[in-house]
Length: 241
Image (cartoon, rainbow, N blue to C red; front, side, top):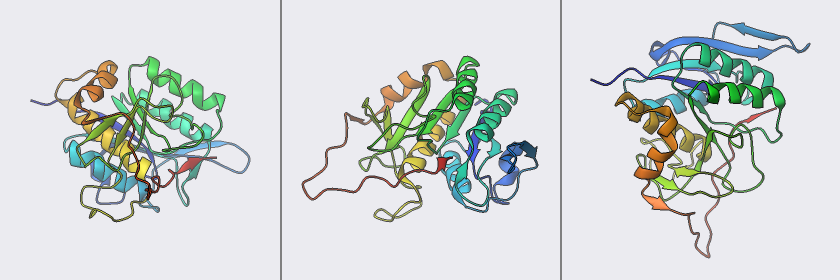
Protein backbone atom coordinates (compact mmCIF):
# COMPACT_ATOMS: atom_id res chain seq x y z
CA UNK A 1 0.00 0.00 0.00
CA UNK A 2 1.36 3.41 -0.95
CA UNK A 3 2.05 5.91 1.79
CA UNK A 4 0.58 9.40 1.79
CA UNK A 5 3.07 11.97 0.55
CA UNK A 6 2.60 15.62 1.60
CA UNK A 7 3.61 17.81 -1.34
CA UNK A 8 4.21 21.48 -0.65
CA UNK A 9 3.16 23.74 -3.52
CA UNK A 10 4.52 27.28 -3.29
CA UNK A 11 2.50 29.24 -5.83
CA UNK A 12 -0.77 31.10 -6.42
CA UNK A 13 -3.00 28.75 -4.45
CA UNK A 14 -5.76 26.38 -5.49
CA UNK A 15 -9.18 26.84 -7.01
CA UNK A 16 -12.24 25.61 -5.06
CA UNK A 17 -12.34 22.28 -6.90
CA UNK A 18 -8.79 21.42 -5.79
CA UNK A 19 -8.89 22.95 -2.31
CA UNK A 20 -10.18 19.71 -0.71
CA UNK A 21 -6.93 18.01 -1.81
CA UNK A 22 -4.98 20.27 0.55
CA UNK A 23 -4.26 19.06 4.06
CA UNK A 24 -3.35 22.61 5.07
CA UNK A 25 -3.30 26.01 3.38
CA UNK A 26 -1.83 29.40 4.27
CA UNK A 27 -1.26 32.69 2.48
CA UNK A 28 2.05 34.55 2.94
CA UNK A 29 2.26 38.23 2.00
CA UNK A 30 4.28 41.31 2.96
CA UNK A 31 2.44 44.59 3.41
CA UNK A 32 3.71 47.99 2.25
CA UNK A 33 5.66 48.42 5.50
CA UNK A 34 7.42 45.10 5.05
CA UNK A 35 5.48 43.20 7.71
CA UNK A 36 4.76 39.55 7.01
CA UNK A 37 1.15 38.41 7.23
CA UNK A 38 0.19 34.75 7.42
CA UNK A 39 -3.52 34.13 7.03
CA UNK A 40 -6.09 31.91 5.40
CA UNK A 41 -5.40 31.02 1.78
CA UNK A 42 -7.65 32.55 -0.86
CA UNK A 43 -8.95 31.07 -4.10
CA UNK A 44 -6.41 30.95 -6.91
CA UNK A 45 -6.93 34.21 -8.81
CA UNK A 46 -4.21 33.50 -11.38
CA UNK A 47 -4.90 29.86 -12.22
CA UNK A 48 -1.19 29.05 -12.20
CA UNK A 49 -1.06 27.10 -8.96
CA UNK A 50 -4.17 25.12 -9.88
CA UNK A 51 -2.65 24.07 -13.22
CA UNK A 52 0.52 22.95 -11.44
CA UNK A 53 -1.45 21.05 -8.80
CA UNK A 54 -3.36 19.30 -11.57
CA UNK A 55 -0.12 18.16 -13.17
CA UNK A 56 1.23 16.85 -9.87
CA UNK A 57 -1.99 14.97 -9.15
CA UNK A 58 -2.03 13.50 -12.66
CA UNK A 59 1.14 11.65 -11.68
CA UNK A 60 0.38 11.06 -8.00
CA UNK A 61 -3.38 10.99 -7.50
CA UNK A 62 -3.08 10.19 -3.80
CA UNK A 63 -0.65 13.00 -3.00
CA UNK A 64 -1.71 15.32 -0.20
CA UNK A 65 -1.13 18.96 -1.05
CA UNK A 66 0.14 21.63 1.32
CA UNK A 67 -0.96 24.91 -0.21
CA UNK A 68 1.57 27.69 0.45
CA UNK A 69 0.10 30.69 -1.37
CA UNK A 70 2.64 33.43 -2.12
CA UNK A 71 1.23 34.83 -5.39
CA UNK A 72 -2.13 36.63 -5.22
CA UNK A 73 -3.17 39.26 -7.76
CA UNK A 74 -0.05 38.80 -9.90
CA UNK A 75 2.68 36.21 -10.30
CA UNK A 76 5.29 37.96 -8.17
CA UNK A 77 6.24 37.47 -4.53
CA UNK A 78 8.88 38.68 -2.08
CA UNK A 79 11.76 36.45 -0.94
CA UNK A 80 10.69 36.91 2.68
CA UNK A 81 7.19 35.60 1.96
CA UNK A 82 8.59 32.61 0.07
CA UNK A 83 11.04 31.91 2.91
CA UNK A 84 8.19 31.95 5.43
CA UNK A 85 6.23 29.57 3.23
CA UNK A 86 9.17 27.16 3.07
CA UNK A 87 9.58 27.19 6.85
CA UNK A 88 5.86 26.49 7.24
CA UNK A 89 6.08 23.54 4.87
CA UNK A 90 8.96 22.09 6.88
CA UNK A 91 6.86 22.46 10.03
CA UNK A 92 3.98 20.69 8.27
CA UNK A 93 6.22 17.70 7.46
CA UNK A 94 6.21 18.10 3.69
CA UNK A 95 8.21 15.40 1.92
CA UNK A 96 8.60 17.41 -1.27
CA UNK A 97 8.34 21.09 -2.21
CA UNK A 98 7.53 22.24 -5.74
CA UNK A 99 8.57 25.80 -6.72
CA UNK A 100 7.73 26.90 -10.27
CA UNK A 101 9.26 30.36 -10.16
CA UNK A 102 12.63 32.06 -10.27
CA UNK A 103 14.31 35.03 -8.62
CA UNK A 104 17.14 36.64 -10.57
CA UNK A 105 19.11 37.74 -7.49
CA UNK A 106 20.35 35.68 -4.57
CA UNK A 107 18.63 36.78 -1.37
CA UNK A 108 19.99 35.60 2.00
CA UNK A 109 16.55 35.18 3.58
CA UNK A 110 15.57 32.77 0.81
CA UNK A 111 18.93 30.97 0.80
CA UNK A 112 18.65 30.29 4.53
CA UNK A 113 15.10 28.95 4.22
CA UNK A 114 16.08 26.64 1.37
CA UNK A 115 19.06 25.39 3.37
CA UNK A 116 16.79 24.62 6.33
CA UNK A 117 14.45 22.63 4.10
CA UNK A 118 17.34 20.71 2.55
CA UNK A 119 18.80 19.99 6.01
CA UNK A 120 15.37 18.72 7.11
CA UNK A 121 15.58 16.06 4.39
CA UNK A 122 12.98 17.39 1.96
CA UNK A 123 13.21 17.02 -1.81
CA UNK A 124 13.07 20.47 -3.41
CA UNK A 125 12.18 21.02 -7.07
CA UNK A 126 12.45 24.43 -8.75
CA UNK A 127 12.01 25.81 -12.26
CA UNK A 128 15.02 27.07 -14.17
CA UNK A 129 15.01 28.88 -17.55
CA UNK A 130 16.25 27.04 -20.61
CA UNK A 131 18.87 29.73 -21.20
CA UNK A 132 20.22 32.91 -19.64
CA UNK A 133 21.32 33.75 -16.11
CA UNK A 134 20.72 31.34 -13.27
CA UNK A 135 17.74 31.92 -10.99
CA UNK A 136 16.93 31.19 -7.37
CA UNK A 137 15.89 28.99 -5.60
CA UNK A 138 16.90 26.62 -8.43
CA UNK A 139 20.57 27.62 -8.11
CA UNK A 140 20.82 26.88 -4.40
CA UNK A 141 22.62 23.70 -3.29
CA UNK A 142 20.37 20.70 -2.86
CA UNK A 143 17.61 21.93 -5.17
CA UNK A 144 16.65 19.90 -8.24
CA UNK A 145 16.76 22.31 -11.21
CA UNK A 146 14.17 21.64 -13.90
CA UNK A 147 13.54 23.26 -17.27
CA UNK A 148 11.25 22.52 -20.19
CA UNK A 149 12.29 19.97 -22.82
CA UNK A 150 10.16 19.67 -25.96
CA UNK A 151 11.32 16.07 -26.41
CA UNK A 152 9.51 14.95 -23.28
CA UNK A 153 5.96 13.72 -22.99
CA UNK A 154 3.98 13.96 -19.76
CA UNK A 155 5.73 11.03 -18.08
CA UNK A 156 9.18 11.48 -19.57
CA UNK A 157 12.36 13.14 -18.37
CA UNK A 158 15.69 14.19 -19.79
CA UNK A 159 18.88 14.11 -17.73
CA UNK A 160 20.50 17.35 -18.82
CA UNK A 161 23.31 18.05 -16.37
CA UNK A 162 23.90 21.49 -17.87
CA UNK A 163 24.70 24.87 -16.38
CA UNK A 164 20.99 25.66 -16.61
CA UNK A 165 19.29 22.55 -15.27
CA UNK A 166 19.65 19.04 -13.93
CA UNK A 167 16.55 17.71 -15.67
CA UNK A 168 14.11 18.56 -18.43
CA UNK A 169 10.44 17.59 -18.58
CA UNK A 170 7.20 18.17 -20.45
CA UNK A 171 6.28 21.81 -21.09
CA UNK A 172 2.49 21.34 -20.95
CA UNK A 173 -0.19 19.62 -18.94
CA UNK A 174 -1.16 16.15 -20.11
CA UNK A 175 -4.57 17.32 -21.31
CA UNK A 176 -3.16 20.18 -23.40
CA UNK A 177 -2.94 19.30 -27.11
CA UNK A 178 0.54 19.18 -28.60
CA UNK A 179 1.51 22.47 -30.16
CA UNK A 180 -0.50 24.61 -27.79
CA UNK A 181 1.33 27.22 -25.78
CA UNK A 182 1.59 26.46 -22.05
CA UNK A 183 1.39 29.18 -19.40
CA UNK A 184 5.07 28.64 -18.62
CA UNK A 185 7.11 25.72 -19.91
CA UNK A 186 9.67 25.55 -17.11
CA UNK A 187 6.89 25.94 -14.55
CA UNK A 188 4.98 23.00 -15.96
CA UNK A 189 8.17 20.94 -16.27
CA UNK A 190 8.92 21.44 -12.57
CA UNK A 191 5.39 20.28 -11.72
CA UNK A 192 5.83 17.14 -13.84
CA UNK A 193 9.05 16.28 -12.02
CA UNK A 194 7.39 16.98 -8.68
CA UNK A 195 4.52 14.67 -9.59
CA UNK A 196 6.85 11.87 -10.66
CA UNK A 197 8.81 12.23 -7.44
CA UNK A 198 5.62 12.24 -5.36
CA UNK A 199 4.57 9.00 -7.04
CA UNK A 200 7.97 7.45 -6.31
CA UNK A 201 8.02 8.64 -2.69
CA UNK A 202 4.55 7.18 -2.18
CA UNK A 203 5.88 3.81 -3.33
CA UNK A 204 8.68 3.93 -0.75
CA UNK A 205 11.35 6.12 -2.34
CA UNK A 206 13.56 8.31 -0.15
CA UNK A 207 13.94 12.04 -0.71
CA UNK A 208 17.71 11.84 -0.36
CA UNK A 209 17.90 9.57 -3.41
CA UNK A 210 15.64 11.74 -5.59
CA UNK A 211 18.40 12.90 -7.95
CA UNK A 212 19.62 9.37 -8.58
CA UNK A 213 16.09 8.13 -9.13
CA UNK A 214 15.35 10.81 -11.72
CA UNK A 215 18.62 9.98 -13.46
CA UNK A 216 17.61 6.32 -13.59
CA UNK A 217 14.25 6.96 -15.29
CA UNK A 218 15.38 9.63 -17.77
CA UNK A 219 14.51 8.81 -21.37
CA UNK A 220 16.92 11.32 -22.88
CA UNK A 221 20.52 12.15 -22.03
CA UNK A 222 22.15 15.49 -22.66
CA UNK A 223 20.63 18.78 -23.82
CA UNK A 224 17.97 19.06 -26.47
CA UNK A 225 19.44 19.74 -29.90
CA UNK A 226 17.67 22.39 -31.90
CA UNK A 227 17.22 22.46 -35.65
CA UNK A 228 18.47 25.25 -37.89
CA UNK A 229 14.92 26.55 -38.07
CA UNK A 230 15.05 26.80 -34.32
CA UNK A 231 12.53 26.25 -31.63
CA UNK A 232 11.70 28.91 -29.12
CA UNK A 233 12.75 28.36 -25.53
CA UNK A 234 9.95 27.66 -23.07
CA UNK A 235 8.38 30.83 -21.66
CA UNK A 236 9.90 32.16 -18.48
CA UNK A 237 8.49 31.16 -15.12
CA UNK A 238 6.75 33.39 -12.57
CA UNK A 239 9.24 35.31 -10.52
CA UNK A 240 9.93 36.56 -7.07
CA UNK A 241 10.64 40.24 -6.57
